[in-house]
Amino acid sequence: MVGHFAPEVGRAMEDEFAVLIERLGYRIDRKRDEKSGLDIIAHFKGEPINPKPPHECTLLKPSFAPEGRTAFSLKRGDFVEGDIDELLEKIKKAEGLNEEVYKSIRGASIVTNYTKTEAQLDHFLAKGVHCWDGRRLIFYAVKARSALELAFKGPLWEEVVEGFSKASYLIQTWTGTGAMLVNVVILIDDHDKNFTMGHDHVEHILKYIYEKSLKPMVDKTRLDVQVTFKFHILGIADKAVVENAYFDYARKDSDHPKVVFSGPPQIFQYGAAPWATLLTSSSWI
Image 1 (cartoon, rainbow, N blue to C red):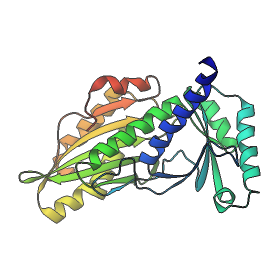
Image 2 (cartoon, rainbow, N blue to C red):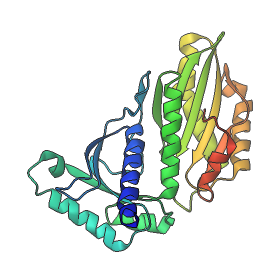
Image 3 (cartoon, one colour):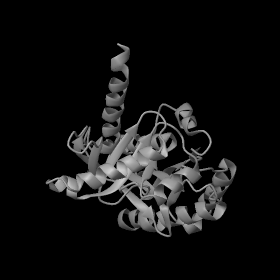
């Protein structure tokens, strides 16, 4: 039994990771590929599956992910520098195989359940490999689950915040009794240890979402818009600062006519306690 444990655990991780990236909008080209020795090869399409939502759902490629077809190497435990070199060597050899799926690999990502420091993540990136560590896996799992649950209620899109390249938001709407009801999930996918969400960052994001998404709803329908917000911040955030900035903007009715901010925002930061998001509520919406 002991001899079967390691391969079975590895297989289970590969299967669950495949579900995660499919729900993020990837399509899997190869899995446990013997020819190349690569764990998973996938390309991004932007439409989640497994399951496929009943309503339209369009997601953006995670900002911390390679461009183009990507080879993923999965490590249940920790890994060493040699594992990075091995992944790059496997990709190089795969390019010589006589199949387009191998020749068209453009990116490399190593995945681990362990948490890496910001300096380590940047070091791996400098070598050409994106590392999805335990913290980011929880962050992306939250994004995938939020997107799926929202998309089962109605059409869902993800938009990037202009001028804030690592910030995006999921937005889903439906018509209630005399008003548009809107859910917004803000995702800050930035592990930079020198970046902390400030009052000005929050205000910029909220203003952008209003101008880009909420104001057009008001102009088109002439209905009031009632909106709820969630913040998921990969790095460190002072919740009091984020909440105060949110309420400062929410109270300025003249800055967002006919848009009502429903209740306090939910704020999750992953830099110190990524698991804390699981303690708050059974509802993700």
